[in-house]
Image (cartoon, rainbow, N blue to C red; front, side):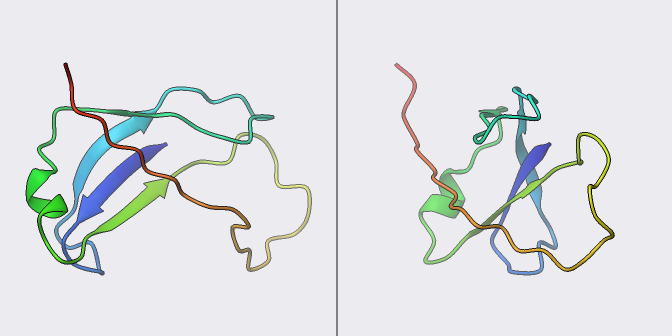
Length: 81
């Protein structure tokens, strides 16, 4: 899995900001470990867009149907000491 950030809704261009380190298929949360991408310009703008891409870990238990994520994305930003 990876996370991307962009200043435009169509993500053109987009910058990868990190990857997911825990891939336990039974986990209900994931941890995104950020890389050295400078996201400060995005945080100072009125809007920015963030998305997470992933690959299913194992077979899909039913035929493909349109699915929606029932959950939330929580972003906590902390400065480095």
